[in-house]
Image (cartoon, rainbow, N blue to C red; front, side, top):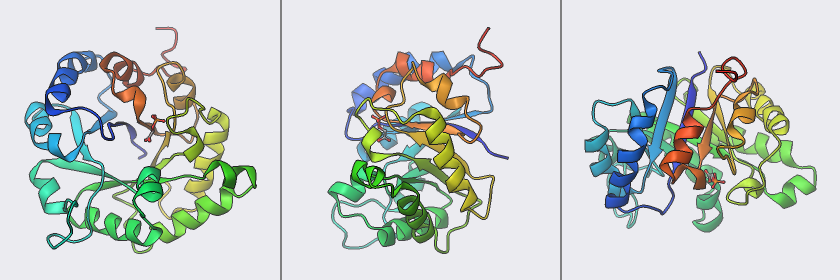
Length: 248
Ligand code: PGA
């Protein structure tokens, strides 16, 4: 069964104190949210411990923003699977375009990181997406296909989430048309062995466009950056309305 998953990617924002403030305002807003909707928060590594303590026993799952492929070693600045599982991390974002663009992440290292996550029973959220230049050149399908094929070599598709994040839509306010995102996510699904993998859309998801995005049949959730930093805004996103409950 495809699961609905709404994840907040906090990038390099929020101190531990700010995380705590966020939860105070956000958690009460979850009371009405359908139990079937998965809610994930991905703070920076330094806040994982405190967040884990605050979220203990609740419905919000904790996600990390990356994971290294080795369990231990001389890898300055990296964090490994055992360190994340100790902090009760259930998900890890892997291959985000900001990692690929600014930190030299390649399909090969993305593949290694996906394997490491699965080895430690952490569900990786694999991010794929095309740049504006690639899109303008008509290469979207080619780029996505290549990323999916290379990143998923040897990966168990039963413990996997994918986020389609067109790079030109991230942090720009320039959302991909919902119908267009739906089409590309359908393409991604057609490349998978397991059609039940949850596939999120990411890129300028906001309280005012989430309902339309989630109304698309191929889209199983959202990976939300900027709009997940505000508790009221993210609460509205998690409480998205489907055509069935729009009138409620
Ligand atoms: P955005 O970021 O919602 O701020 O566009 C999405 C992401 O980078 O995951």
